[in-house]
Image (tube, rainbow, N blue to C red; front, side):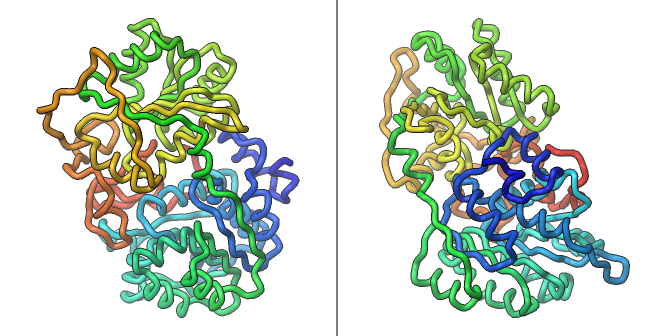
Length: 445
């Protein structure tokens, strides 16, 4: 099945194709027609199933195919997407912008931890789609700086997580401010009693979709941790590639700068590699992916966002050169291998700085990953952790506690925003300077 067969416009299909996707995932194949039909939807799908495109693509189709209203010369908010964390909010708005790049639609994102006044100015200019965390949206509602009276589509993403984080009261206040006639989409990884109660009060005769858990992929992937000092990661990676004769390895780094540097280091070792990230042109990224798929390129080094379009059925090896600072991204990353029933191997090179990240990952996947020290690369038992740079190219953004416990709670404490590729559209810099609202007809990543 193709995306165009699902009822999406040529402009949207073109943007999706440019990201490397040719056929929809199960959740997309079911959700897109359901959303386009105009009814409410209750979908059971966790992160990693392609659920974000499952609602952003039909959302863009519906908004672009309808008459675009103007109120006092400004575009009213027509779609509202609520997410539990600032990281997810930024990623969702990125999807809205990238998939809608050939449409005349605008979007932005608001969350806590950054200044509210610049956000107020952005909202006054008018946007079609607003992505928000409940806490910061409620702040704007209390100040009268956001108008939700024209919302046509409401999406609650990771609703179970929002309830776990205590946002139910905020969500109910938001619902009370919305027009009664609207389309409601609720996405949740689980169907707990609380979620069912929320759905019963929110949804009107919804279509129901449930797809298999993506975490089942983890069961057929051999995972291991190689403890190593931070300055020995590159030599260890080169050692593993050469001694194991790996011919196709996808390597994840935390930053764009780190990806470029690693490629340079590997090439000095006689290992062919290319990097893909937000600073690379689309043509360069397409060429790198093509050469990697056909086997002429041994190593592809990627940041999380840039890797979204990588879909290789028989990819044997994934290496986390840097652990992701968002635990769910670990599942996304290793899920690039072990596809189509094939076995795969996921190796993580972990230094003392990343112990909190590793703890959060193991908590998420509910298992302890086996450690294996490679001879000649034994880590220094007396090494002290250092702050991790979470933004490309250095310049601050580090923090001593790389875990996420204090991060992304809607209004949460300010802190360096994780780098997962390019500066997030509407993502808000750590300085508190939010970006301008993104016109979907603008440049992609």
